[in-house]
Image (cartoon, rainbow, N blue to C red):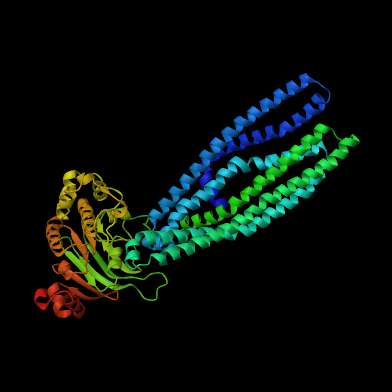
Length: 577
């Protein structure tokens, strides 16, 4: 998973990676050349008292160091640019993929997990790319070059490397094996904390109203402690690496000085060569240390890459056909023919055998008890879900055969939860029509009965809107969401219980004003209040996902027991008549 992700999103930056590779190789070679020059100064300059040789060789060392610094700067600069661009591209790919998801896929992953994957998971893989480009590329050059040059100084003394390298490799492999499952648990723990935190922030009023502060604090504390315990386990394993490497380094240094000192005393090795050999040994061990450090990043990046690929490889269940229709022959018409919907794995369908037709200029209302499938039915029209049986038609075309943008462009949706985006009132209203004039915005606010409170705000249309519209009351959010749909002037209006937060007077005035705007459009209203839907041209009564009554208010009062129960629970017989 990790290698596939890296190949896919690093391919456009091949030239940058090649440049980093060249610069890191030159830097490593210059670094490896310095101990040899130092050995020459000791053996041919200091030992013989040749000051000129010391100065000339020292100049070469300075030039090599300068070249090393320049190469390091270039490598780090382009390495950082490449890693940052990689992170940007993966985040964009994730965003684009999630944008194609239907409500089913979003529910499958969950919003907190999708946020974690787009931020934290991408950051972990990006960090691996960065560390690889600025550290790991030079490590094999340093290690291989160090071994070759150490052999060049003294072959017999190099036998010590046969002792240290295999031990280090086995230790790193065992560490990697132990840390991989822990990192998977860490990422799941972060998901859980994000989910709990989102619930607590969004439901803070409910928590306080039911005096559950202590319970929620304990719930968050439990999740936080579980994550902390996992991270401590990771830290303990990782903390073993540095002492172990330093122990090996010190043991090797002692062995080199011990055996190398004897060889110098016997005249089999020069003092400068021993110094260079010790330096090369440090280079080899430091290269192993750098490679070992990558084992801290690789397991976590591997887990994160798996989670990212899960999102990137998931295809939406709502897919546009290749030959999708881009023109609707009968704009505004909405129809269902024996439509049904069943959630994956569910024993019973949420909707079953739904059949109706609604034409431009008509109002279709849907009413029923809680859980009867009203919102699900409405969601089938803009194709937020795909019907699992039968057909759903918009504008005379099956929604599965029509282009998604064509279907969406013909619909003005006011969802059950009136969500507003951070920005201004004007920017929110222009979600319906990006080039809408101020006159159009005020006209929509007039219809939605929102002009008065918007005018009273400092800034009017430019008044600030907090994320989710939390700086407005529920009724104000509903009216602004209705105005947003009206600005679009679509051929189909979908109102999902969009008048529930309005008082009866405002509800009545809004529906009266709405009639003038929607004369040539089809209006579909999901409602709980009989007063909101009683004047509809056609009313569907749902019970357990089935239509148990269909007709006008007066017809249903005579023929539908379920409708009569709903009506008489809200008003007297005289009011109902």
